[in-house]
Length: 180
Image (tube, rainbow, N blue to C red; front, top):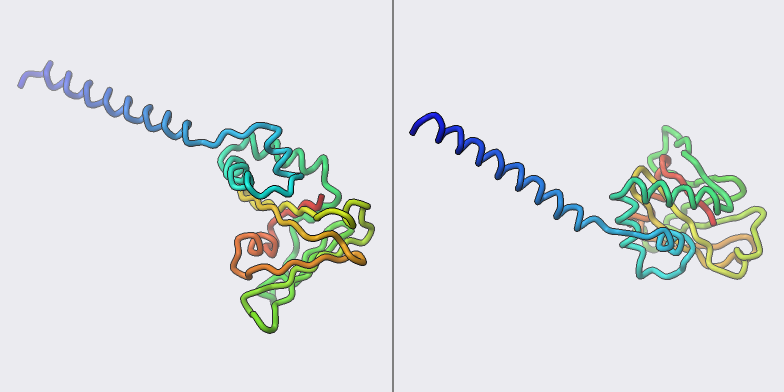
């Protein structure tokens, strides 16, 4: 085997590697979820659960989609809860407090794997008494949406599985909560 054939084989191997790498990037781009602005807006306000996974995946994967989502939440939020200081002696948060609202977590006595999440809004808007209340939770690139029933006497409650992703985010001191 002479020097020129070794050089050709090396060039060919390099070209195959580059072509394969570019093909994988194209395939990955095809697999990325495309979400339109209207879909993000609908996800934020809609009570329809069907499209949630698609939009949540796009928010997780695409920085531009996540920025649009967070910008919309900031514009339309009723209230907000930023990072919470967790007491060092407590393993789990018992409460989250935001501007004008609070979330209390109480473990069920009969079913220890379930938690009552009690939402209290101090000065609620009219729609909080007639429509479901939507909370958005964001931690890094993960987002979830939780819906409470309309307020009765300033409160609403939800039963959640203690090990659910939604509850883990909701009770995480580093997560941000947007109340609509």
